[in-house]
Length: 180
Image: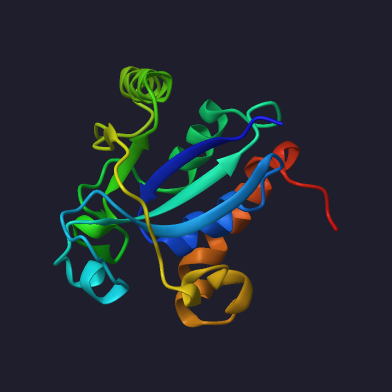
């Protein structure tokens, strides 16, 4: 079975992880950091904006079950790609919207989707999502892994993460992994 990697930044990585781990064909979703200059980013450095890194998720998926374009469709549905360096109350370059591409095909697909959405005026403002080559992926600290699953009643999870996870379940029912 062939596996492919997608790396996406769209605000808090807890939100992205909770959304993408529900999808059939997604083998794993790992929170981490990418796109900065710090050779040893930590959550504290990233949150302060000191590292230049964005909070990202690295998604390993089976393209025979879910393709990159569908992952991008979900990505653009669960965050606001028109706000520069912010998602809701999360403000700073660490919360920027970015697609870190792993090859020329991903780059072309991402750029084409953004161009199409801008032409169709899907949002009232232009999309500011960066499309940049993937760099070194730094895995986030263990306590961030499956954060929403382990902390569903934490305030931020209730207010911000849960609505995004629900939106995926409502809008992408046919893409969900079977209930276990």
